[in-house]
Length: 241
Image: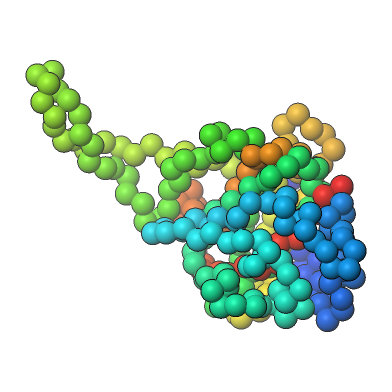
């Protein structure tokens, strides 16, 4: 049975982190094995590839150091340069690539919306990029497309064919959680107690080349009748043990 995470723990985490924001970077939270002395988080940055945000009509790519975790992002909930700022979109998936083996205890991220929003969030782990979804579906995605085939006489003909999308099923998630936001305020969610095939320790075991797809279910076609919300995000906090 999949474990659902209520909003109480998420709100507690958000409250604690927000209260501690004015303090020094090292005292705000515990990144486990990634803790570095004197604000040195080189190992943290090297552990992840660029985070990819997928939304209907486009894709954004964000460098972890420049856009998602820095002294400024933690202390001021903002960015050093506007070109590094995360854009507000109706993201369906955030893709976190791993550059090394890790045992992850938790992953937290802050969201901001223009209106009040209630997000349902699911996470899916893939050992290689080839195992990950290659054609995800958005609420505005078409059901069919025109393809070219060769008929029995060797002539090329066009026909309408159903598109085969490969979004993961809800039951395949390794973690689930929720996040409630208020207009123009930063709120966090927490992924923990991972239910990964082959492991029973509650950790997410990653390898080099592995990928975590974090899906915002409200924005996915799988939940077509749910309200969709654009949002931006900051402060990716990954604790490895």
